[in-house]
Length: 439
Image 1 (cartoon, one colour):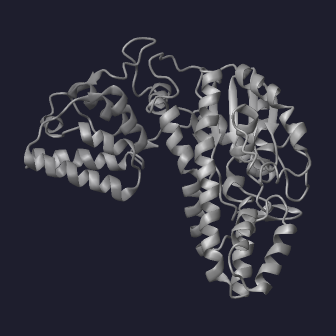
Image 2: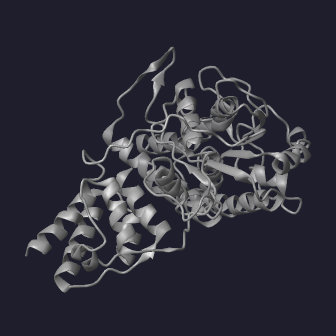
């Protein structure tokens, strides 16, 4: 019974390692790799377009944009190739000679101040910049399922029977819409006011189907094109963010409290919209930047919002002090191993090799636990031999929620009762598990 209690205590310690038991100071001395050129690809949000200032940002540097902040902090040249109104479709047109959906009536339609001919003339410059850049920052996707869908919706509705009052009002709304307007939200509110929701919903389904199918198809092409032309480049993909953290014009530091119901709905939509980017991170190995908490004016970031995104990008970049050649930035455990190394928790098998696929034994795992908890363990402790580690480490590596960790604890306790033995796992898996529990 004494051994059992000690085993349960050890597992509970794992739950507490993100609390008072563990105290890792933030690393404020990060050293970046040398980035000579930073290329920006994207739409109005990434370009630095502002709602209140209506700043010209087409293929030009905007000083208070997150890309400019990143380039300046890295001491690099910024190559701005972002344009308001861009979807993945427009970006792909500039990269793919065999892709030009001439039958798409919306192509380049939302780009407000630059002609299609002028945009396509920049394609050779964009392609060359992709080949030469050390860091590529991509922020695009919102127009694929947002701004453009008003026109898709209008055309879909044209084939349906609509109340004339709603049709007239909707056309006027869409004709007056500006870059960044929530045309879908406005159309729904209008339909609700004029009792036309039942007629609107089928059109919305078709509109979203159009937007997301293009987004998913073009996204993979864009990422694969970049890696094919610059295999060693670092790509930072900026996730889309909700727009409920708003300021008023002239009050950039006063953020209104979001409505709880609206917040929940928008969070769900944004999570769905970012799904392909997150899945692509695991497939391609690029950096995915979570932009939660970005403050906006109407739907574009404030100066503080851009600084927030820039800081997220900089935090995600690899540390130049990281010495291990067998853990590339695309490895699932890269950030975990980097954290272990920089905080002196876990070293490599030699100066330049972490040994990601090397099996970690009971004594090594016990030593690792001792560094991140107040539990003093040795390789001979019997309780370590009673914890089956393989599947449990994988579970822990992707879970941070309290209930998930609690479920893991229950599973481990059950295995102790069943007398199942320790099963070795790799060093990378062990690092990943501990990292996600302490971060």
